[in-house]
Structure formats: C-alpha cells, structure tokens
Amino acid sequence: MRTLYLDIETTPNLAYVWRLWRQNVSLSQLVDTAQVLCVAWKWRGERPVQFAGINGGHQEMLDAVHAALTEAELVVHYNGKVFDIPHLNRAFVMAGMKPPAPYAQLDILSQVRKQFRFPSNKLAHVSEALGLEGKVEHSGFNLWVRCMAGEASAWQEMERYNKRDVLLLEELHDRLSGWLPGSPNARLLDDRDDVCPQCGSDDLRREGHAFTQVGKVQRWQCRACGAWSRSSARVSGTQIRSMS
Image 1 (cartoon, rainbow, N blue to C red):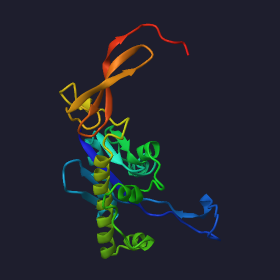
Image 2 (tube, rainbow, N blue to C red):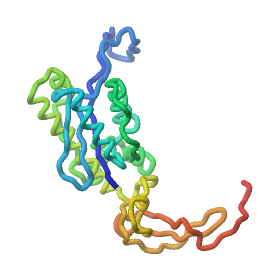
Image 3 (tube, one colour):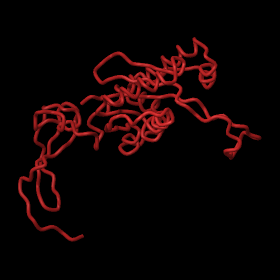
Image 4 (tube, rainbow, N blue to C red):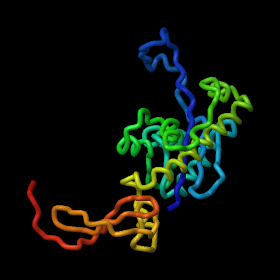
C-alpha cells in the first residue's frame, strides 16, 4: 500500500482584541486568517522526508503536496482529519486547484483516544510514553513569527521540527501496529488471500472462532504485529437470526 505520512504547520489567525482572557473575536475584528505555513511528508519505507513552505513559494508548496496526496493510497496523520487535511483542502480550492485523487486516511490520534487512556493524547506525550524519541524542541511561538518575517535561521529550525514530526508518525504507526482496528485492509492490495489486514504479514496463527448472529468464522492473530482478524467465510452457520 502506497502510504504517505504527512504533517503541516499553519500561521496563526490575526485579530484586533481588547483583552486577553475569554475573548470572543468577531469577524469584523479579524485581520488575517490562518494559512498553511509549511508541509512535511514521506513515503513509508523511504527515508527522505520532503519539505515545502511558503518561503519557497506558496503555489509551489501546494503543487508538491497535492501531487503527493494524489499518488497516495493511504495518508497517515495525527489529528489530520480535522486539521491538516481540511487546511490543505481549503488552500487547494482557494488556489483554484482540483481535488487530489481519493485516498484512505488513518488518523492515529483518533485511534489513541479510542484504544488507550494516556494522561495526555498529545503526540509528544504518547510517543515518549511508548519509548520513542519524541518531538524536536523548538523556540516557541516566536519561531512562527520569525518564519513569517522570512528569517532564514527560523525556517531551518521549522524544517527540522516539521520533518521530525513526520518521522515520528511512522515510528508511532509501527509501535502501535496491531492496535489500529479499522485501518485500510492490507489484504485488498495483496495478491495473497491469507495475510494480516493490518500489516500484510502472512505469519498468522489460528486462534479460536468469532461468532455473529448467523455464523461461526475462523479467528486469526498475526505473529508479526499481534493484530486480530477473522475470515469472511463462515465455518458453520444458520439463515435465522434474532430480531433484536
């Protein structure tokens, strides 16, 4: 499966405000809206991490990430369904671009929220709690201000920060393999029938049966990632089911 790991950074909204706490900002106070500042992405199993920012040209950045999304079969992100992808889609449509080719999405944040109870679901905390190196430290909000001002050293720092987040996504994906139900089925892109739907490994063992209202099916566990799956064909069954 052609899998793309992706992370974006945006500029802040700019507005005139009278106070700092519990401020309700009206549209008339809004001076400028958040825009995509930069994007980093990489392909699964390929080391180079690509980076593009508005410092290299706004349209050039959009063209590059649009081409990557069009090539992808699966896009993996962290909170990307409500943040990264909608921001990119808005940028595409405002630039008069057509939609990229359809792709499946795996939002690791939503899976972390469903499966676990970490004290914090932030990428930095979850990754470090699982023994990964974590994110790159940066100089804080001032980094975004310096990038918007075009400071070369700030852009170098931003590129390191953005690229590390993408590498961390792939590491976290591997670390949580087997804990991500609902991921796109690897069997659909494999010529072999009996492979793990999570990771594509054929190292499966039979582990009892799963039961539905109308049948019994073989249950499997992957020795590589630990994920559980089941066959689609019934071992035995009935045509009669409960009405409840």
